[in-house]
Image (cartoon, rainbow, N blue to C red; front, top):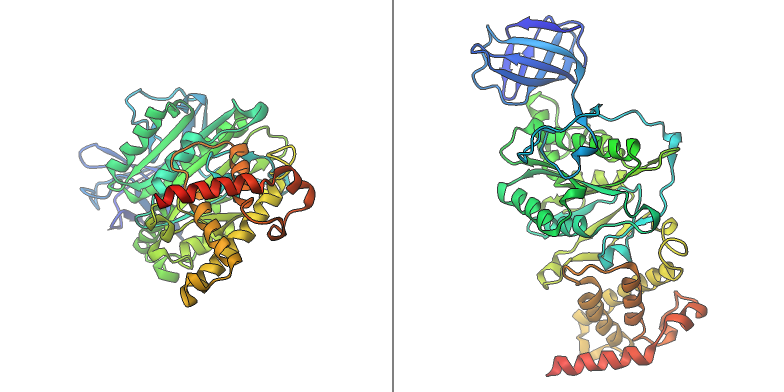
Length: 472
């Protein structure tokens, strides 16, 4: 039943309030008719007794307290979807902005998603190849996983997002049934154009669905953008059996909009002014990743967030870390050295990778190689800390060797620029770098694997050659 009311009780920022309202539902869509006949849209965001708060999408300017007509639609916000959304560009609420006309709609989806029985979830296995060694080799992205990227102001997370979208792929029989949903929240026009231009020039836009929310768009759009994107992902995954990777940037802009929205409603703030329900709100987005029993498709998420003041204990990265299965952390020191992508190896981890790598997925030597690289790079950090106290000349020959390994590892393995490496190239490069050590130093790997991949003589030749080049 559609209900219609005339007049408002109060206007406060982007919110309007009605009293004596009955028979409406939370998150119900609203049509707002102004004095001059113009139509705006809104959404019920709070109900207290017979008082309802409505968030107006287009803003509350020119609204009249006396003559505004409010019509309740009797349904939540829905987005029209079909497989034709692939290759299209939408604004934050799912309206096409690419000049190609409306999308032919097969089905309307509630943007809040469908209830998912936790028992029906399937444990994620198999991996998605991003072409980036420090991700594929050390923090492997598993299908159905949610693996955030923690960045900071001025860090190249936008470049990394573009590179992942351009290079990500599946292997085996599912290689052709792969798609990407890209959602940008609160970005400037030049950044939005950079994303769009990069995908077009790389020839991947036909397999990407873009949702672009600009910084000058209403905050309600910012709150709806990830929900529209995830609804499109779920539709393609569970209706068309596709494996979908969702890349969302920047989750911090979403949380800032949520804080502004909460303040407008007069809610009591929590940590750093964010609402007390920030955790559950983020969970309502991030938990929409996964694999469902009897479904052939999957939804994988890479949400990107910029940590204010590089503070990993800030509420946004802190709460995100509780919900997700690991994190990829960008390191400012590596960035200042000119290393790209500046992925910090030691604070990064993927909690699900152990069951999605190895024989049958990547290669049988992947797990021991990863363990050895982590252990060796941790020794590099210890040697550097010691060198900062006593000087590098006073280090033992073993520690000096670790210092050299650290330089080579950062230069060749972490810093790869925009090169697309497959998993075999990544693993072979890891063994080549480890082979500069004596076998006794590689104590995280068994003899059988070392016999197959260890080649100290070749590594020393290349190591000395590089030094000669550096000296010249």
